[in-house]
Length: 397
Image (cartoon, rainbow, N blue to C red; front, side, top):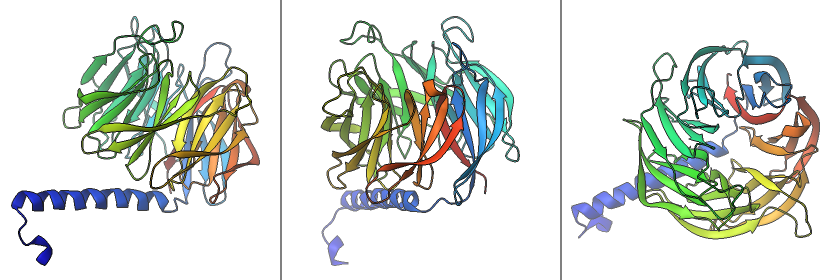
């Protein structure tokens, strides 16, 4: 009791809030470290146009205990479902339709599906205009009330409400980005490339490749509204082209992979305010690499010990060790994805396997993750699917 002698009510409240926040982050780390063995449905988003053999979204069964993967075939036929997201209740799946004039002029689509957990098949529910051309990324909030979408060519973001039956409603928020970057071919305008929520869902983080900015928005999940934070963004190097964002399980650090510069930038993060402080920028490529390369995906291992980034051109996954106190990165290895153009990849919920999607090789190569070093070893298992882009896991048992 002596600890509280002389403390004011406001001091006590601040101390209590700090303890609650610490407990929240500790619970995140603990839950991330827990084994997620069991059975899953695995959904793959693809490109269906420009000569692709794909027809839409594909489903697989995945037994995380035996590591067996079984194809269930085409789950739903739809156009360019390049990115998919799952509803937290496990009953619905949402996909962007990444095209320029899909649902009206200068707008792609956002499609809603009901999931048959027994067969993996998807039943179409409805579709809304994404409010911008080429939507390339979609997120569902933890309450299951809203989806948030990034429109790449449109240079905009939007939020859409989800009804109890899983269908999507008219946009509850829309923000148009403006400006341009250093690269006249790739940064002639804004290009929103991803949108992710903080663990407490008070903030949305948006990578805009065209603006060289990681924008931060206040997200009101009771209304589905988005408003610029103060400060409204963190700046990346000129010409970097930020693409995707990954949050450390501790909530203390964030990482941005930049497509044009082939780099990963580490930030410290104050989740109370949404403020970001740049710590380090490091290349994802070997020092002796001289060819062309575009980075694609970034993901933190569930343990928080390692970070992975994909290289399209070098055709590899770069493995970094994460300093637990500083959040900074140390290169570990560059592992070949055994295919061409690894657009994205996904770490399974157990943290045991990495699924590397080789878009131009039309396959997904599965790697084992060394839990001590983070290094990747091919398992010898490959899934054949046309132009894979996104993998998501749904626990069913």
